[in-house]
Length: 325
Image 1 (tube, one colour):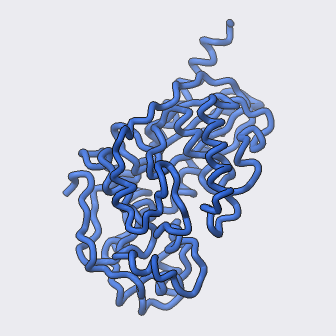
Image 2 (cartoon, rainbow, N blue to C red):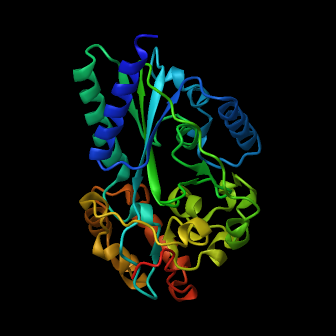
Image 3 (cartoon, rainbow, N blue to C red):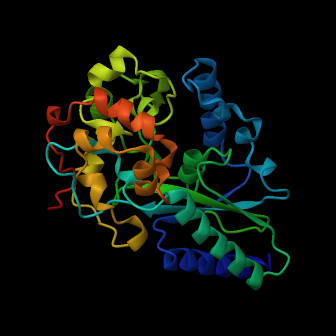
């Protein structure tokens, strides 16, 4: 047992380094995970069998069911959250864009910072093998974040932290070292069904199960059809890029939450002040310039125009979910 104090020291030092990179919360899990993680994996299987992934074929990657396949000899995993809640709001009567896309592309931001942690770990323990993962990698990222104690998976399928709500993106650093694990998070949704009731298309078919075929976020970001299905277009309201309704109504996001001052997460002005006229009149080159370095590049210029044609920017008041001015 002589290596235990050393293992604990290294774990604490790694977490401290992660916080220096702006991550909070941070936590550690051990592979292969607890019985609950196996339940989450079985739930993914059922979700795929029901066809709820719609066109997102990559969700069926076999490696998603076994984190050990992503890094040979993987033993532990550092899970990190990056808070993207900022002290800004969309201008009234403008088109709505999901908060996660307001700043720099979170894939790049999280990946760059995780890689710094991996290199630091290598300098502390030469020969250590590691792999940085963001949500583009075939990993059950929310289930592993829950396993590492970052928060619980809410009924809307997003991760919820008791003090920070659900406005965070997550990342993971897989390592072949033994680190000291944290206890898994305890679910605290209770009987609340606010997210299920608020979804305009009933995309949350039952707690924790989102049918992408009915989800506004899926259709505005992933659907490559020339026109949106009528049921989606009629329910779109102001949303043209993602949708935050299920998070806006969550009681855990109704309290006063910490706002990020991280420069990478501050919103581009145009994203909070986008009119339908602008969205329809900008040519492809203008759109590409506006979207440089943004996670929203996934939405092609013609899709922005398609979404804007269907949107009703005046149909929903600007929500102020966290008491920020």
